[in-house]
Length: 176
Image (cartoon, rainbow, N blue to C red; front, side):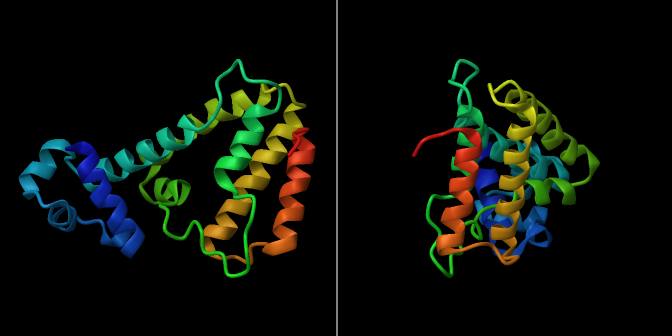
């Protein structure tokens, strides 16, 4: 039931942003009573936190374990965030829930959930067998690029997209 409710929250977020997430709207979207919703999530903040945690879990599920070869974690970060190709007019990402923006809008407690994850991920990047500054630069470049794509803040397309991505892969030491 929790996943069904979180699915409803994600659909509302994609369609209308955080303002669309009201307890009555989530209950209606999920086809449950408001009391049924409140049994699992006592507040809007709890719903938002549930979505942030689930999105972070999904992202973490595609990242390699600690026994992966050097650079594998940084390369997986790139692969999970930025597709290899991005044709002109790319809108990939616009139908995704932006975990970082959602966490910030959810308040300090919800943002704290994502900060804890980032601290662990940053530690993994620092231990990825690369120079920690290189691994951190890759993370920050990928995170910024992903946000530019999500918010359509003049993201790179076509050859520039491929060229920038290739530079990051080269920086990681990966071969494609």
